Length: 116
Image (cartoon, rainbow, N blue to C red):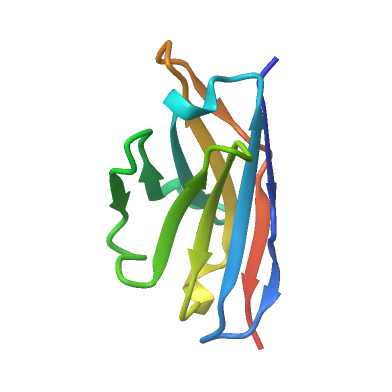
C-alpha cells in the first residue's frame, strides 16, 4: 500500500521561503524518482521539480533558480525548498513517486498560499 504524505504548506509573504516535505511508505524509496507538481484552481497541473535515485535534478522554468529539491533516503522523504516566493506560486503542491516498477503514485497535496 503506497502512501505519500506532503507537509509544510501554509501562508507565506512574498519574498519569503518555505520548505515542503513528502514522506513515502509502501515503495522502495531509494530506487524511486521523486517529483513535485503544483496545481492552481482551474489551471493545468505544472511540473515543478524532480530528483532521481542518483540525485539528478530537473526544474520547471517558472521555479528555476528559486526552488531546490532534495531527498533523504534514510527518512524516505523528499523536500522542496522554495525561496523568493511569488503570489504566482500559490497552488496545491503534490508529491509524485515513480517506483522501480515504473508505476506512478501521488500524494494528496499541501496548500501553499503566497500573499500579504
